[in-house]
Amino acid sequence: MTARNSPESARPESARDIPEATVARLPVYLRALTTLSERGVGTCSSEELATAAGVNSAKLRKDLSYLGSYGTRGVGYDVDYLRYQIAREIGVTQDWPVVIVGIGNLGQALANYSGFRSRGFRVVALLDANPDRHDEVVAGIDVRPFNHLERIVREHSVAIGVIATPARAAQDVADRMVACGITSILNFAPIVLSVPPQVDIRKVDLSIELQILAYHEQRKTQGAQAATQEVTA
Image (cartoon, rainbow, N blue to C red; front, side, top):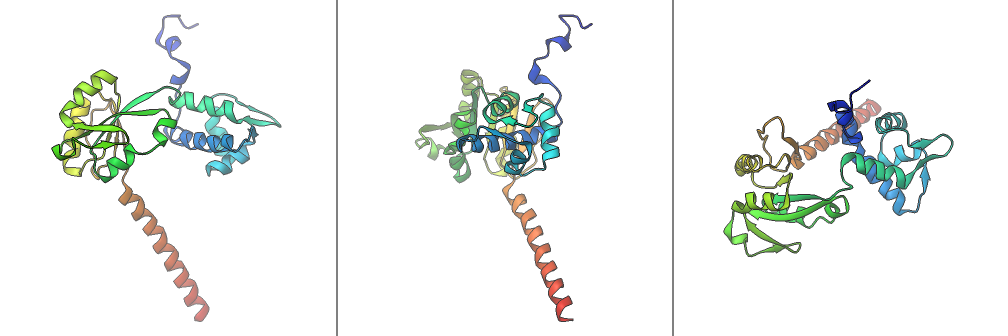
């Protein structure tokens, strides 16, 4: 029997171990459920949810099994209930303050993205090292000097930072974020950042995604050309 004051018994339910691949798919399921809910769908089968999320139903059922048993045989899933459970599991039922550093075209687009608020994230500050930007207001938020970072993190208890700077500045920004207590970073700069092991970092490289699409387009073109040559041979 586990002692009441043991670390295992003190772990919250949401601290259960879930495979990283499953964690990466949970937001996709949440988005699909939100869309179904907005359409007025009250219940859905695993097949319907899997189709909406773009995965196979066996994988979806396996992923949801890590959260608990929320489906009813012969009925399916209660859309709003499962939506809440997934949102709670990934932590977006609470309000997460976010700071964005680098207010160029990409930073401004991120600041104007309405999906942050609806998904549990609140942009509390926009920072840029360029003094020419400090008189700007983007999405109703004043652009402030980058050297205000420490004060903002302290005042708003910021744990999540977004880097949208040029590559040459990104590592210095990440170092400052880590030093003042930010423990999760979303990096849009085209560079691999070095951070301590206790800091989670996610990299979004749009050029790499386009290059992957280019690869598949090239394969399709080559396949079509090969098929044409076989027909005309």
